Length: 233
Image (cartoon, rainbow, N blue to C red):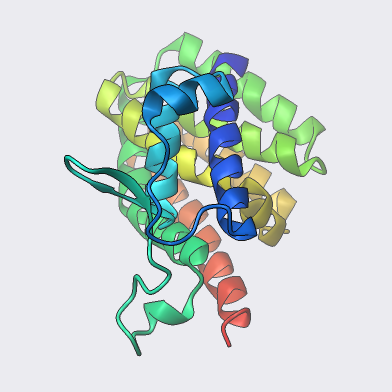
């Protein structure tokens, strides 16, 4: 279980450092990021972890990649003037777009997991759920448990593309997990919905698993949408 989380921590270090540098004005809009080799040496991470960090920063709307030129700090005026999306902070907008995608993807992944899961998959998921219940009040542990749970579901599909898609989703979620999970205050619903997914997958009921996943992600989407709306000017 822990092997799924530790790689995320490595690129979170890079993401946090770049975000802080932008906030402090050390990196201004339009500035180029240092070369990859320099950043690998600076942060002590692998090239793969560095590029995962770049993917997260691009999803957050903080940087953009220009082929042949490098990566640059993105303009704060990324949204057209007067557009509704422009009223939402970049992080919030990126998170909501991710949740919209998950409303489509999560039910499909749950359905495939119900069809293809093995006994070892179910044992792994059961361990994660037990750990989640024991540490519900720990926000960081809850975020990591969520990461582990959805990675385990993706692995249970026996489809490496689903695994990579879920990992990419959680690159963004783990990079901003304090703000996201801090808004998701209904901890019991979080655990209960994961249990419902587990039960459906255990009996290999694809339709029931898909419905449980839809209920889960729809509640999260509505909660975040309402919370982010409160911060709009």
